[in-house]
Length: 90
Length: 128
Image (cartoon, rainbow over all chains, first blue to last red; front, side, top):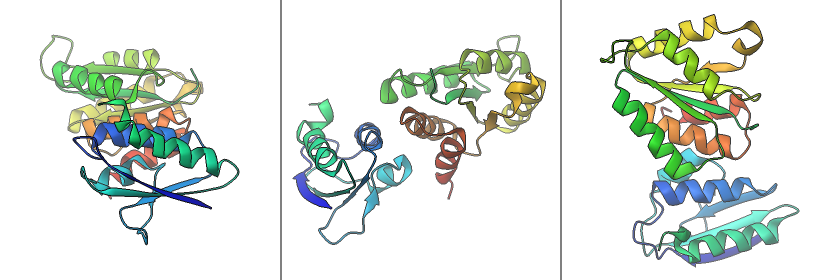
């Protein structure tokens, strides 16, 4: 299992469009991809568009990410990178 | 394309088209997508023939998930499914989910390569 964290800096936070991008990215990995707004959970399945959208994380919150499985390193790096790139929305 | 297709059925042509625009912009082009809105006369309503045509446009070997708005959209969609060729019928399903949110969520699930059953279940999670 790998863990990391990243600050949500895009204006709208984890709203609909960023949620869709996060879900699509998470689904491209075979292993478990989860995130939470605290280091202790509750952990949300990043592959579930409904669950991701319900979190409604706002700008300024920290996303704690954990990945597990054969591609856990790549999955963690990719998710952290997506958030740092502000979901490519500027 | 092997991802599950999404069909949007609304009484209003504008709602159907607008919901499809949202799916395209938010989810992208990796999911077959079609919509049917309005009756044969171009007014508010739904048309079985138009729904069948939309199913054909969004057809995927993985199947097609249909999102509907109000009563007649659901019954006409079910009728359209019944009238489809038998070999396709079993791979078409009407989702019990809100139209706009359901279409975006179903397309998101489909874009990850999920099965028709998973696409339907995820869209229906919205009401849970």
